[in-house]
Length: 167
Image (cartoon, rainbow, N blue to C red; front, side, top):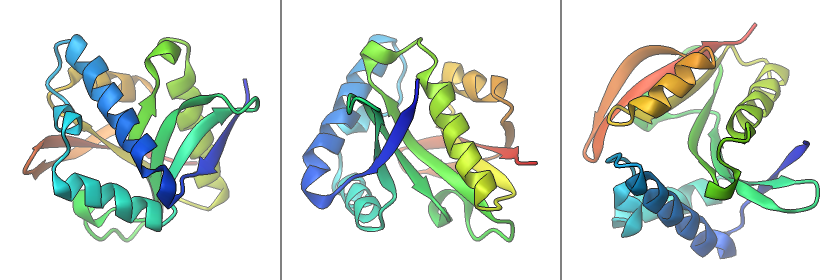
């Protein structure tokens, strides 16, 4: 199945926040303490979303029939989590796949598409993070070939930093 990435606009912020809340509730049902702040996001998280939309980094992920599968934030630089880096990379944040599409391979397809775009953009790495309290997600990324290269402690949690070398 082909997917497209469509730029999220300022007027769609409520949809983004609703997707985060829906995902937090899904994760909570799995008894994982991850992203629960999205149920009632603090102002710094709302500002983080607004900044990402303004910088054209947030995308809805859709089928060719315009069915929304979820969303993702793709950055060319991630100072907050990774600091200044000398090697060119793409950074994946906030990958959300709607619950009804879980287990159908969309997460892998989305990441592969971002990886292909990163290669076309001559990036050396594809990078992402995962909350250290979510071992299932960490294992998922490791099975996709991402290597844990560090951790980042932020006020809401400790995050494992992963990267995949692009050849």
